[in-house]
Image (cartoon, rainbow, N blue to C red; front, side, top):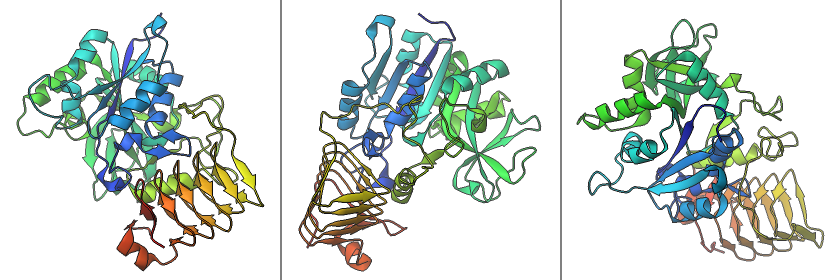
Length: 407
């Protein structure tokens, strides 16, 4: 039973995530674990579901098995009211080809829109960490009468060149231009030291979306990208508006974490986002019970600290055992075992990792099921680490899934 506008959610989850290698060597980027308990896609899906948008198709493509399994086992909504979250792989409905871009992914999946017949379509990315009430953006879109509304987050103008930038008209709402990583980003009317950066979240009026996708599909010069082709097309037609993310009011938000949004597209950004979680007053608060980040928690006992094991400014997941070891400023996921004398600092430890006696791990990311032998050191001698592992631009040492560290 619907009381508001009929909205279909489409989550774009087909990205290969090459800049997150080796975390994406065996899984799609939206399936990368995050925050000790979650996967990246849980943030976008939680925002949609919490807001009442409960008919959602997740478009998948690369290395999607773990992502498909996560959606199938975790995101099971009541069929009684027609609610669903469903993974939709590339179906090659238009011939034997993969999705060639995010716009093509939706164009090849138009049957989902035709079957659901929504008034509006919310197209969201799958790999950002944030809280948002999308229905507030839907209402702003309806009020504006636009063909598309693009979520914009205010960033310092000096940093905005790293992103897709929205130039708003004098009214602060209509989009004049959509610029990809401009050298001199335009300011916001009334706030010239800030720029609107695109969050990769869009609300479309259904008819306008279908028309734009068909026109784009017929354009042989297009790369069929939502941000690169579809949005600029509607901007040129004068039918695009920006939604100021700062206006979004999420229940339970604190002054410190209000408006938080992070693109975790690189290893350094992924590590930094975890460090945001573990301060005494976290920059992003996972403990907001009024707008929970939802996931499927494993059936494991609580974390255990024995033989003087301790953790400071850290998060430790269920089923993990810290035995006579010291953890500081780190996120330790579920089912991790750390032996006596080991020291972990400023690190992200994913599920199933085993860390031996007297091992030292500093400023590292250890993927699932990594084994660190007794006495091994990671993040201590960076030059040695570069020869053995992946080291990010910011000096974060990353061990891929199932790797046994060198001694």
